[in-house]
Structures are given as C-alpha cells and as structure tokens.
Length: 454
Image 1 (spheres, rainbow, N blue to C red):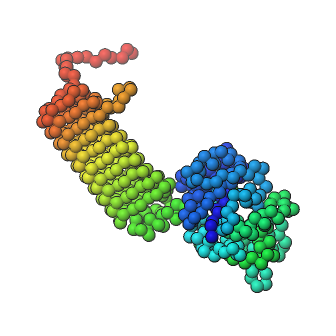
Image 2 (image 1 turned 90 degrees about the vertical axis):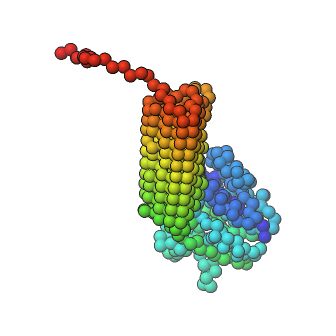
Image 3 (image 1 turned 60 degrees about the horizontal axis):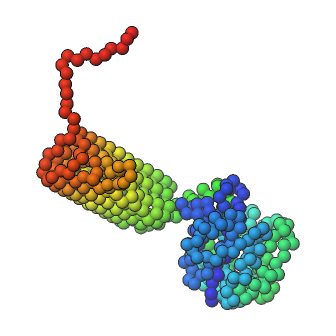
C-alpha cells in the first residue's frame, strides 16, 4: 500500500506569546515541525503533505528541503477540517498517516509499528493510558474491548471521563474509506469544529477493524502549547541523546547538563564534563576529553585530544593528541595536526597548524599556514587584513616567534628562523635567520618624572 503522511502545522499557538508560528519554535536547535518531517521521511515510500495556515509562508519556507506538498488551511476549523483540505491530494490506493507539527518527539519505530498493521479494511489508532487524562479525548470500547468511538473531553459523559485510555491524535486510515468519512464530518459539537476523531465511530459502523498501538513513552505523543511544555520536551530530548551516548561508551559527568543540537558521535572512553553544547555534526574520537562549558559546532576531534574548559570550536578539524584551551576559540577553517597545542585566550581562523606546533597564550593566528615544531610566543598576532583583503602568513617548520610579535601578511618565515620578541615583521625572513624588527631602546640618565601640582 502507498502511504500519505499529513502533518498538521496551521495553528498560531497563541499561548506561546510569540510572533513566531508555534511549529517553528525549536527543540535541540531544530524547529519542531522539522523533527516531525525528519521522522516521517524515514517511513518507506511516504508522500509528505504539510498543512499550513498562520504565517504559512514562513513555515513552508523553513520546510522547503523536505519536498512536502503544501496545503493551505485558511480559517482552520479543527483537525477534520485540515484533513479535508488534504483529501484531494491523497493517493487512491493506500493509507494516510496523520501527524502534528507540535508533537516533535514521535519515533519512527512507533510509526513503523502502525504501518505494519495497516490494511485496506483497518484503521490503526495510537493511544496511551495516562494517570491524569484531563483534556484528552477518551477511547471508548465496547464490552468485547473493541474501539467504537473517541469522545472529546468537552463532549464526554461522567462515565466516559473516568476512562484513562486517551487519543494521541495520531492515526492511520485507509484512503478508500477516509475520503467518505471526511466528507461526512459534522461540526455539531461544543467547539463548532470538524473533529478527525469522529471517523472512529464511522469506521466502527462500517465494520472497519480498529486496532491500537501504544508508544514507548508519554513524551513521544506530548504536544507543545506553551514555553513550559517546550522546555520540558527539550530536556526529554536531551536525556534521550545522553542515554544513547552513554550506551555507546561515553562518560557524561552529569547527563542532565548537556545539549546536543545536531548529530554527535563518540568513540570509546570519551569523557564530557558539564554544560557542553554540540551543534551540527560533531565527531569525537577515542579517549577524547571535553572540559566544562565547551561549545563545539561542525567539527572533528581526533583520538586522545583534550579540550580544556570554555573552548569554542567551529567548522574545524583537530588531529590526535592535541591540547586545546582553556578559553580558546578555533574559528572556521582551522586544522590542527597531531600533538598541536592551542593555549588560553588564543583565537585561530583559517589556520593550518602543523604537528607539535604550539600557540600557547593570548594570540591571534588567522589565514596562516604553519609547519611542524613551531613555537609562538604570547601576544603574537598575524595581521591578515588590510581593510579590503585578507592575506596569507606562511610559517615554515621549527620557527620560533618571540612574544608580542606582529606578522604583517603577506609574509613568509623560513624554516628554523627566529623572530625576536616585540618584532613587527613586514618582509619575508629566510631560513635560519634571526629577525629583529623593533624600535631602538633609548635611555636617559637622571631623568625626573613630572610631579602633580598640589
């Protein structure tokens, strides 16, 4: 059977108190609706339909990479109304899975369990039992335990309110029946809306088998209506990622204090201290140690490398057994060979730094090609920008650069050369040369410092 997936994302989300459409608020750095789309596209053969309404242009723009069919729901009148808008786009043979853009943690394994039970004469319903079912539609069963209806909270009788099995809103219905059921929906209810849940009673009347599937946990089917719920699901997501990391052999000194906003993969015996943030795609090799309060984005860290606290690395490749930080910032384009060292308050940008080279303190190295065994003294900077263009600094192997030096690019320092402390180097230096480029020191005997007038 073919599979249509309808994702409802038309609501404003007034309780978010935001100008941003609700479904674009983020979990782990990604809009909620994109979490749902990412899960839905894992389903074999899925054709995606995204129902938009409030600020629909923004929602569709954020989701354009998913090639979803955009369906507009102006003046929305409930979930049934949303599916009625999609109905003309559904494939004749197959089923339609209904998902929600503000229910971001639904798992592909749960949806696959639903599709495995799909048939032309069965409706698959995702339900869950809650200790406190307040606000949810109740699953009504007959004496044989068969589902016969879903009754919304505001329309439920006193007896129905005692039921703790509730509707999650996620269902999978055969299209040959769904089209007829949607056309028959009525808005004669307390809300004046077209409830998608009304098709359950229609399915029972038509003799369609109604089967139920249950998620692994409540978080999978929890929706977001305000920022409190958004924060709760953010923590749930992060805890899920933390568990996976620890199952794969990483040690988290406090699993409740880590934020993964992308994809993090770890080798064996990785240790991650508290309050670290990982964005984009980050790869940590074996025996990597990450100190507290580090922020890594789109980078690769080689085996045995140590990142001390408060280190920031973005779009960089770090070799094996490097030593970085604390308070270091490696900007995009940085590449460190094995055993390189970047110390405290050092910033790099588009810098290739060779094996065993050291930039220990208070330096800026930008647009630089540095060889192996180089030692850069404290306070050294590469002057790579002339106000219009960036220029390259080249430092060969085994160069020694004294403290408080300025290398004015474009410039080349030859192999084994020494730059004396405090030098401003504006011309190329040949191999094994000593360069002193600083003002001559002048001294005056018996000089009297001016005194302040009383």
